[in-house]
Structures are given as structure tokens and as C-alpha cells.
Image 1 (cartoon, helix red, strand yellow):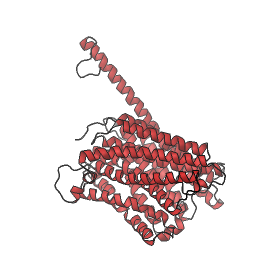
Image 2: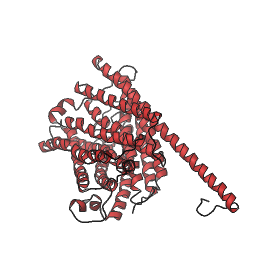
Image 3: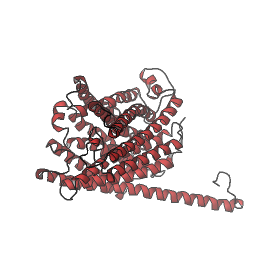
Image 4: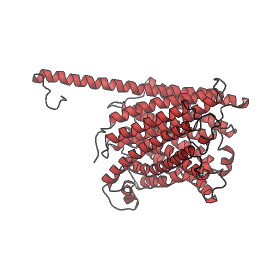
Length: 503
């Protein structure tokens, strides 16, 4: 059954307002950090690391929130979803954010978004144990919200398609005849439900034991195991945010090309490969931990090489095929969605380079790494989210890019590309990441990066303001329509609405 509308649209539209506002705020924090590194702004190191922690946690969390909203909206076309579940998920997310922000800007926590054990307990007097506990409790609340979300999505997918294996297209992969082929959105959702649920459960486990260790230091935690669990959780979660948001590409682009995005055998195989790869690729973050078994380090390098193939072969290549000869209609939505796939694809290149053991030893703790993951985010997941926001207020007709839309799009993309290139160039020159104070020879790159960051913020504000205004005009038009219907009813039936009109 294909549901012709999504009854969850109100909750999703509200969530995207929050997402857009927080994206903009976190980008401003990033701008402040670059300006401080470039000595255009004086920020005390203690505050810098608090901002760094908030920026990392905020961007990753908001990427997950916006991706979840995108996927929830389009899944509503294919399976029934319980609206209350989304509100529970959103409420837990907001509660978690309150705990996290309180721990940082009230409690002074500055241990980084990865809460890497045992750093939260080794503050050097900069924050109390309660601040670290509050930070981790906030993460735990957000994780519980996501688990509730995935349980609902998984339950409805299993109910509709008879199991997650069917939803992943196994019948198609095995060559069995079936008239019930899951659409791309379902295949993607089934994969995300599996691997991100595992990541969140393991993340919750390490969060709980870390909290216990903070409150009872005699409770010992294996630091290497904790690091593996933390990086597994963090790496899978941020990847899941992109894999949820890409559903917008599968569902929206066909409106612009006139060609449905179909689930083929290759498409299903690729997503099943992604399901495995996404849970193994985090090992490339541990290549400097020589105490790990050699097979883990080798696997991490190999998976880093091959992980981009399913993406490039299925989503990026397929997008080019769908666009070619289709008389593609271009507006802000289609432009952002296409650039998001391009950015996501290009971002796999510096990630694969960093996954090489010989390179990783030299460059992993440099600005090369924020260069590659800002490519995934700014030109990937965030661009997908902004494209979805533009589509939500597009109206029934596809319009060409207006002058303001072009200005916002060009400003954002130009700023993002420049911002990312400065990170990559600095990383290649061995400029370290996560340093509040920079040496004089690094200042020029910092200042150039600050200028590009300002452009990204301007473009983002353009997208967010456009979206909010679009919702306002949409509500006004809806109110005018209802008023018109009521007036028509008054004239035609003595004050009673005629059949088919809203009372």
C-alpha cells in the first residue's frame, strides 16, 4: 500500500525548524572557533573546548535528528507510523539536549563529543563529576529516544513486509519471484534500523559503565574496550544520519526526472553490503592503537577502501543515470539534493586516504580529519536536510531557482567547498586538530577558513529563513482557503458547509 500523504507532516515540519535553527547555531560556534584560532577573536582555551564539545555534539545530534525526520516523513508513504512515537522520540531528544548544554555551559564540561574514556573523569579541576554525568545522561536520553523510534519503524516494516530480510530485498537478491518488492526508502530504513540500533545499544552500554565509573571510581573499565565501543557508536551513528537523509533523494528526485527510483538487485546488494561495512569501518579510527589485533587494523584499512563503492555504484551513479536525458527540473530542492550526493561521494576520497595505515599515522590527528567529515556533513547530510526543507514548502508546482535562492545556494556551496579545502590543506601541512591556540604559521589558513565559514553561515541563514517564511505563507494560504470555503458554504447552503467542505 502506498500512502498518498504523510499524516506526520506537522511533527516533521516542526522538527526541521529546530534542526535548521540548531544547524545555524552550531555553525556560528564553528565560526567563532576558527576566528579564535586565527586571532581575530579572543576566546579563553577553557571556553574554546566547551564550544568545541557543544559544536561536535550539536552537529552530530542534529544531523541524526534531521535524518530521522526525513526518513520518518517518507516512510509514512509506505507504512503506517504511530504519531505519538515520534513525539516521544523528539521529547527525549530535547530533554537530552538540555542535559548536554547544562553540563557544558553551566558545569563546564569540555571533554569532547566522543566522551572518550577516561577523559571525562580527568578534568584537571575544570569540571566536576556531576557535569560529566549530566553530559552522558543527555546522550543516554537521546539514545533511548532513537531506540524507541527504530523499534516503531522496525515493527511496522516487519508487519508490512514479513521480516527485515524481505525489506532488505533478499528475495530479489536470491532471484526469487516476488510481486512485493520493497521501495528504496524501505530498503534503506531496514538497514539503518539494524546497524544503528546495534550501535546505540552498545553506546548506551559504554555510557552506563562510564557513569558508574564516574560515581564509583573503584569500578574498573577496560579503556581499550571502551574506546572501541565509543568509536563504534559514534562512527555508525553519524553515518546513519546520512543514510536516513538520503531517503529524500530516493523519494523526491523522481518528481523532477519523471522516472521512479526502483529497487533493483544491485541496489539491494549494495545496501546489504553497506549494512556490514558501516559496522566495520570504524576501525580506521583505531589504526594508531597498535595493541589491537593486526587483523582488525588490516580490516579497517581494507573496508575504508571499499566502503565508497556501494555509495558510488548505486546512489551517485544511479542519480547520474536518472538525470541524464530526463529534462531535469531545477529548483533549490533539486540543486541541494544533487550537490549532497556529489559532496557525499567526494567526501569518501579523503576518508579513504585517511584510512591508509601509512597516512593515518601522520595525518589522523591533523585537520585533514575535520576536512573529510565536514565534506560528508556540509555537502552531504546537511545539504540533504536543507533540500528536504525547501521541498516541504515548495508547493505543488516546481519553480525555477529565484535570484535569492541562487544567491543562498552559491554562497553556501562556495563557502562549504572553501572551508573544507582549507581544512584539507592544513591537514596535509600537519596542522593539528582540536587546538585552541595556533602557531603564527597557521594563522593565515585559520583566517581564510573563517571567511569561508562566514559564507556557510550566511547561506544557511538564507535556507532557514526561507523555510520559516514558507511555512508562514503556507499556513496563511491554508487559513484563507478555509475562510473561503466557509464563506462559500454560507452563501450556498444557509450557513452550513456543503458536502465535502470542512466544518
